[in-house]
Length: 146
Ligand SMILES: CC(C)(COP(=O)(O)OP(=O)(O)OC[C@H]1O[C@@H](n2cnc3c(N)ncnc32)[C@H](O)[C@@H]1OP(=O)(O)O)[C@@H](O)C(=O)NCCC(=O)NCCS
Image (cartoon, rainbow, N blue to C red):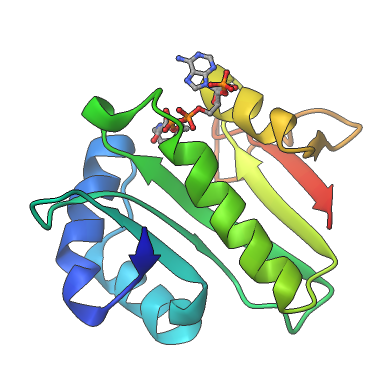
């Protein structure tokens, strides 16, 4: 696991496309996240220099920090890497003085919900927010007090 560099951007787009085939972040969005939040982005690289996962969050200037994305490539899943990426970014945010971390997750994404739950995130009381990302795209908001 290491800090992101500009040359990782096309690879992050590739990993994101694989993890979120229905609505991946386009290159320009990843580029803008990099410009705005690069110090809060971490990537997972295998021994051959290939990108296998990434996590990114917003900064810590506001009351809340948001996890913007988390992904691990299919062949690397269930080996603890998703948890390590989350632990890394949460520890980083804690070190920067963040108090609250929020994320949105697709309510049927049992794997991700279980991971966030095990890290101490709690779902917002009202349940999934309807149409959060547009018509039919409901999302569960989960919050962690650091
Ligand atoms: C979510 C994701 C990042 C998890 O990555 P991972 O490396 O497989 O996760 P880990 O191996 O660290 O597992 C962490 C926890 O997730 C949960 N989990 C992982 N795989 C699971 C599965 N198949 N079923 C249920 N829970 C699962 C467990 O709670 C697990 O903890 P445990 O191993 O102590 O039981 C990965 O599945 C992924 O990239 N999915 C597609 C993109 C995505 O959904 N991202 C999150 C969007 S909000």
